[in-house]
Length: 186
Image 1 (cartoon, rainbow, N blue to C red):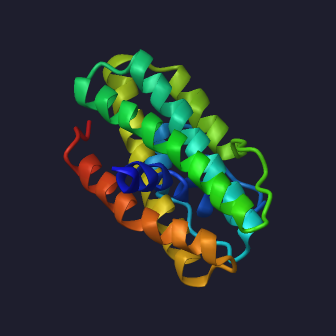
Image 2 (cartoon, rainbow, N blue to C red):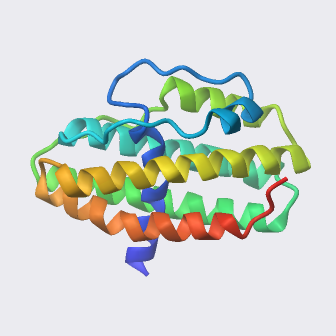
Image 3 (cartoon, helix red, strand yellow):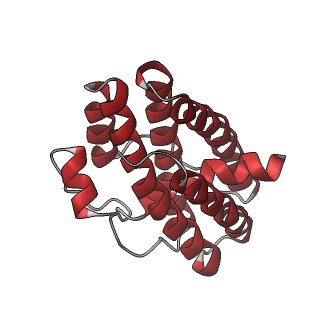
């Protein structure tokens, strides 16, 4: 059960991985534009602090966007997926922080990247079926990015404790991607 909770939270962590550590991020104007642009690409960081920063931002995005899903979503399956994301990403933030501190790394407090904030702002302007479609589109993109983040750090990261956390996240993120494939695509 802990492994499922832990890994699920890391699914969204990849969202920031693709943005690059501290690199300026260009944001599409709408969810439709974002879907057309596709996920951000880039190498996962090899250093602990950039990885922790990106993973924390990803978790925070997942939590905030999924709280909005609870309030604004019209599809019960979307709201249920959102609740799972809140639970998983709250847990993974705690686990990442604990693993980092045990390894002597002080991770920065989670903060949204500018691109993530724009995505949250987009969701705040939507309700019902329009919200559901934008939320799921963002989740699909964020999870692909999270998979790249965690896979990359698991293979090349400089801190063994965080590599272990990233490695455990990979199959969980993949399960979230599989679950998203079964949710509506409108």
